[in-house]
Image 1 (cartoon, helix red, strand yellow):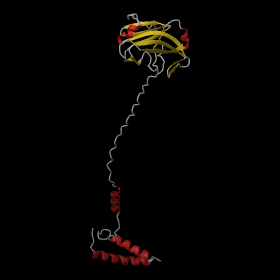
Image 2 (image 1 turned 30 degrees about the horizontal axis):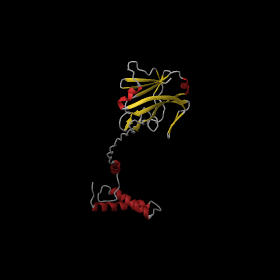
Image 3 (image 1 turned 90 degrees about the horizontal axis):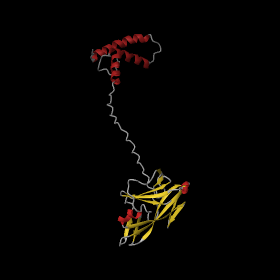
Image 4 (image 1 turned 30 degrees about the vertical axis):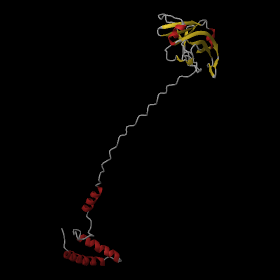
Length: 253
């Protein structure tokens, strides 16, 4: 329901008269409080007038305002990016480099001689390479020194050094490389087999011989095996050299 301005003025006048009568019964009421009472009374009469800016707020209006205040815009949640953990790089498997020592492979029991393989002389193994290889001697020692190189056995072990003489039978100077010739060397000591180690000698030893020989020239080359000290008392020691389905056996003891 709406009231025009004239109606509002009339009603206000009536209320003012009524309140005047009531006010007479109220003692010691200050002017400020009287104004508040008058404004409240006018608000009751003009509560439905849209033109009255100070009209009383009804419970329904208050409820509506609260409802609007309670309505909150629900923000669309940002999509959560699933971050799949990156697996740690596989640790690189480190391959130990071959130690340039005379340490032999662990001994293997059994005979080094293959009974199904034909036996030949030691020189026949190297003949096609234009080399003459002859066995010299062997010895046990704690250290082996050649030039500026020295090889020492581990504590409790001993070295067995086998000496050879290698000669170039070709008519010209040439480089000798035996490391890629697929020649196998097996030392048998009282039934235990050993493989020669990689030496740090100047010519790399007989198993990895890398040298240059003039025509008819020769030099010493060795095979070095490492084993426990008690093998010095062995009763039987032999070296088997095999290549291309043939083998040569050198009896050392």
